[in-house]
Length: 288
Image (cartoon, rainbow, N blue to C red; front, side):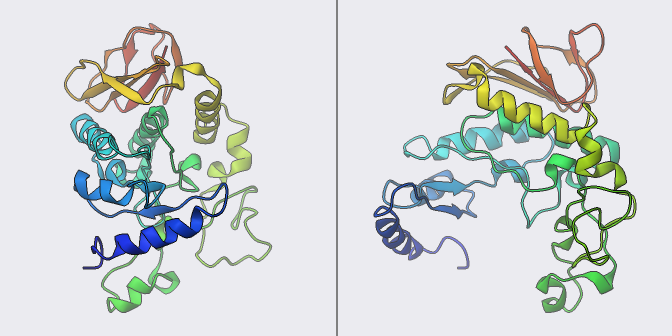
């Protein structure tokens, strides 16, 4: 098999013996298995330090699917020294904005899932461009670089749509990414509002949301504690509390507003109504 071959564990143990001879080194593996027990084998004390976990990335934008992904991820590491890890995106997957519906609704959902993953205990992996709210790009055939395109006889377009360079500044491509007008994958003409430069000046931008969320995650004592406590929530919603620090995270994946959990709002992924007691659809919130 391409993935989860038994012999790979001996290789991991060999690698771990070498790494353990050097301070401040670690090994992480992309573990493409969906069985909790099989995942746990990779993060035994003499194998990998961390396992790159795809469950949250593979979950639908649905409270039940997201909760199941979180529960399975925590179950897989419960007897391991390694914590659970989280991501909603990587260089092989359709970007969250596109995956969750595209355009305005996809962006709102991607912002909401960003807060959910950053509320969870354990390392979080952010794929560059998600902090700008970038969607996948529909590229012309002539521009495709992924070997999948050629190997499939031009039947599978591959992963280039999520690998377009980042827009940094300016009004026209390549937006400060390169001094050359051409980049290895062409950049859209309508990304001027998505540049780092533009978003840094906008407190409501996706970049500003990420920066504030990461600041709170690093400095606020509500994010301590490695265990979760699930709260009751309306259909299509979820809410959990970090045991220890007390952070509460709520998510509304339903199509209707719901009552906001009790507490003081630290951060929300989108605008909250003036009443302050309602969580709109496609929105997540942190409270203490």
